[in-house]
Every structure is written in C-alpha cells, then in structure tokens.
Length: 170
Image (tube, rainbow, N blue to C red):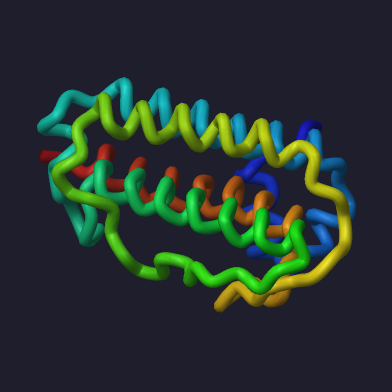
C-alpha cells in the first residue's frame, strides 16, 4: 500500500513518531503522499460553489476556505523550514498554528495556491535524509524530510475537518 497522508495520520495517532515515518520512506514516497493530499484538496475545493466554500457549519469554527487556506499557509511555512534545514540553517518562520486561512479566498485563488504547493513538493524531491532538525510544537524534532511529510499529515487532518463542515446539514 503506498504511503498516504491518511496512513501517516493514523500511524501518528497510534503513537509512531513522524520523524521515524519519514526515515522509513523514500523522498519519492513522501512527495507522492503530499501530491495525493493536494489532489484531495483540489477535488474538495472544486466540488463546492462559493457559498459552500465559505459556509460555517456545526461545531467547526472555520469554513472550508479557511481550513484549506490554513493548510496551504502551513504548507508554505513547512517548505520554508525544510529548505532552511536542508541548507543547514535555523528556520526563521514559525508555523501558523491555529490561524485560519483568509476567509475571503475564492475557489480560483485556492486552486492556484494548491498548484503552487504541488510545485514546491516537486522541488522537494531532492532533499536528503538526516541533517539538522527543528521542533514542531506537537510532533517533536523533524528534519527537512520530516517537515515535508508533515504537510501530508496536516492536509489529511484538515481534510477530515473540511469534510465535517460539508457533511453538516444546512
């Protein structure tokens, strides 16, 4: 079974460390897991009209647009952290923790941001294992590859959140 963000999320919830999962997989597998999550984000965003993207529902505080925007903001920051670590530098960008994405983003903007995130993922294929680490607030120390795998896990987590908003009756 190929590596996926959902599988990584399940394994981390079961007690595995994200870094150990990154160490156990090739960078190609990690990037493919990220691509799979981006494809899921694209399908979800494409399936909703603007009202559906911006609707607040149930106990979830964010709309789908805010959830996806947050995931994409975290993706950008995780890539910056991974690039800094790959160059042996300390990252200077904190992860946007608990910050909703831009509520006003339209479908076209979200889809363009997903395309940009896929381009970043493709460029990350060259990251080697090992090297310096930087801490994630919940997941511990991660090297550059661990930060890229974090993107797949994070997307999977927020896809579940977005699905809950969509499934909530109007």
